[in-house]
Length: 257
View 1 (cartoon, one colour):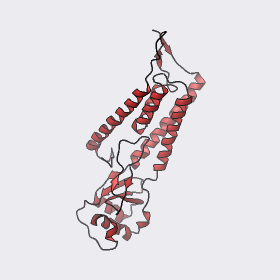
View 2 (tube, rainbow, N blue to C red; view 1 turned 135 degrees about the horizontal axis):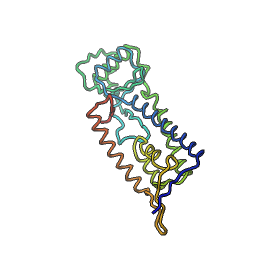
View 3 (cartoon, rainbow, N blue to C red; view 1 turned 30 degrees about the vertical axis):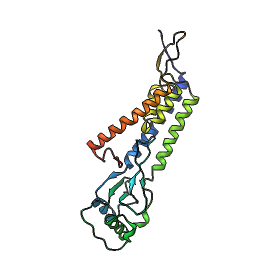
View 4 (tube, rainbow, N blue to C red; view 1 turned 90 degrees about the vertical axis):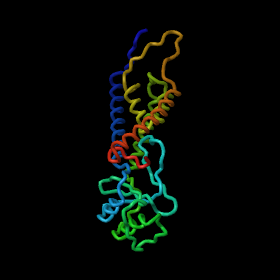
């Protein structure tokens, strides 16, 4: 069996190299923004302190987080609201960070009747609401993830470029087009795309065995890509849960953990 290197022409290779670098930089930018702005849990007292100090540029009420598996392409956990305001309170600070607390857990709170208690889930939520009113911050209710749109656009751009290259670009070597399609779109956080960028054409020059006469083309198939993507989702979920337990919200924020 002979080994045949597959390599594009020099100029074409440089163009693909520039595009690969741009995609990696976009991925790093989206990952950094997502990590920085990911909701991190804080105490009820810290929430009141930030409200009292005016360190709240936006806030939201909710009763649960939109839970699920790791979200592909840097999706952001969102608050779900139904009925009364609370018990979850999320807020953004001037540095762009997002925090949240469960207002059902507090040491003590004094309600003054400044807000209608029927609108809130309990005295804890009512206490923060009256502090917001006292500080003139009520008008700042709104989206706490201002960069969420930018991250979504980057994710869509990466997905679109990947799809265009897989469909119209050079034929992959290590896997079929369907293999890479299922792996990239199933694996969380765009990690499948990073694997594709490092392993297959047109990003690298893999060495592949020359097929013997009568042999079928030896490339990974779509069903394997789908299975690997599902397996990656499960393993990364477990890994993040363990890291979250060991390092806490500061380094591995998971509001729905």
